[in-house]
Length: 253
Length: 127
Image (cartoon, rainbow over all chains, first blue to last red; front, side, top):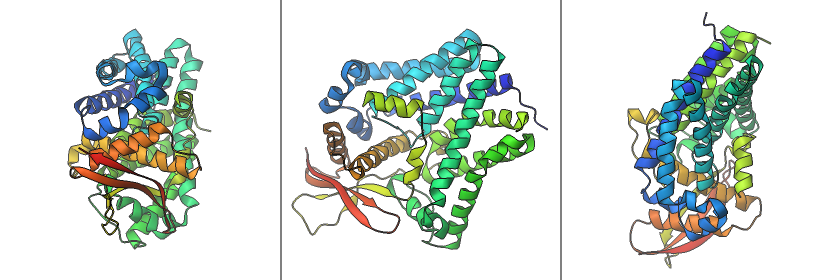
């Protein structure tokens, strides 16, 4: 049986968060002149709104910030004071990116990544209790995110009938490689399975086997979502948070 | 805006999942052509296997889609669109317009029950 310690989970979170931070920075760097990116991040009205941060968020300065974020992401897995500095810098860069976009960049993945990075920035500042608290905080937030998503879907009849999933898949911005018949059996059962799985996430806290099952299911879910909806950042951000759930399960409730 | 963004990022309520089911779509059609069909402005690139991890074009499209959804959410809260929001949508419409000329844009929300509503609209001149 996989035994996950707090320090082991922090190490895994640092490696996975480092990958996420590097990929996020690199994606925005290579597409910084993309017409869509420029359209939503540049302009005098946005400058007015950004106030004192405006000079830092203009294209030239922001490109430098992304390079800094890239370096911070590479530093994260190193550990020690270098890794800690990487976590602090990566947190700031991720927050500034969200400010530049006036909110979420990619459906909320940056929110989860920010929490993981915050935990990695805070954990080294204290002893074992603080490190444990930081990891369990991430585990609690990950659990909350799944449960809230599951309850929101459960309240929406379309997810039980198979119409909501079919409609989401049909949204042009996602470019999904598949289609579901509206109200068809596949969409219906996938919708029900998603609701049930998300709402049962708290079971991860009951023991190590349950935690492993939940984490395995979550990884498969996020990879599937990335394949269908192109939400690669969810794989990376939630992937970085999932080791925390293994710790929660190891401690048992 | 800055304080709101920071608060949402550092203390996420995961409430954005509550809007599951409602879809906001940015649409375009030639300005002054009321019989022309509205077309979706944002389209994702074809998917490749490595897009599970590395997907810069997809990230750009989805980031733009987030802007559209945020604008729709602001409008559904019956708040007037801020200058920055309107500016973003206008620039986005211009970036997505398939050819030079004047284009009309709108943000149409498709509710889970099938009802639709146009929450924002404007025009843009793509040079």
